[in-house]
Structures are given as C-alpha cells and as structure tokens.
Amino acid sequence: MKFNTKTRYGVRTMLEIAINASPKGIFQKDIAKNQNISVRYLDHIIAALKAKGLIISVRGHKSGYTLTRKPCDITLYDIHNAFEPGINIVDCLSESKECEKENSCASRFFWDELNTLIVNYLESKTLQDLLDQHNAVVV
Picture (cartoon, helix red, strand yellow):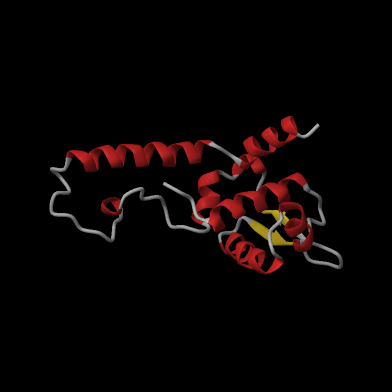
C-alpha cells in the first residue's frame, strides 16, 4: 500500500502550518520553500485542505494560512480524507465494488481487518503528535 503524493504533501503542509502557527498564518510561498514543494503543485494541496475545512486563509494584508482547529483535534485520517475518500487497501473493500464471494471469502475478512487497523491508526495519530515529533528532532 502506498499513499499518494498529494496525501504525503498534505501532511507536510499541515505540519508546516502547525509549526509556524501565528494569528497571521504562514504564506504559501514559505510553505513551498520550507517543504520543497512547487507553488503550483501546492495550490492543489491548499485547495483540498481548504475544501475539507482543515485550513483557512487569514484575511488582511500580509496574511497566510492557519489551521481551523487545534493540532490535537486534527487526525492524520482527516488529512488523508482531504485527498482520498477513505482507505481501501484492496478493491473488494470499496463500497462501489460488488463481489459474489463477499460473505464467504476468508481473504476478504483478512484485508478488511488490516484495513480497519490502518484506519484506526491514522485516526489515533494527530497533527499534534507530528508536531511533538518535529520539536523533538529539531533542537
């Protein structure tokens, strides 16, 4: 299983905003520079995060982006869902897929259990956890 680039960059963007928390926020150009993401690509990341209500642009002259909630209230699953609808590690777990063996397939039960573990893990980790790890490694 591999998370897409937008999800990975979305996590990095959210962490950068959390690191640089201030009432005026952080500029997109500074996020791009600090995280080595092109401004053009970051436009898509920012748009998705705003659409999910995770960040807002602060109004006023010389203002940037801030979080809409405290870092401890934003899970990595919230960030993931800004870019991909849920997690389905195998196609047969998707609600849009029908499988005739759905109720009798032992491997499907295994994949479903693993999928649930991954979702629960992402729901248990918050942006604050990443911020704490960042602060521990950057002295």
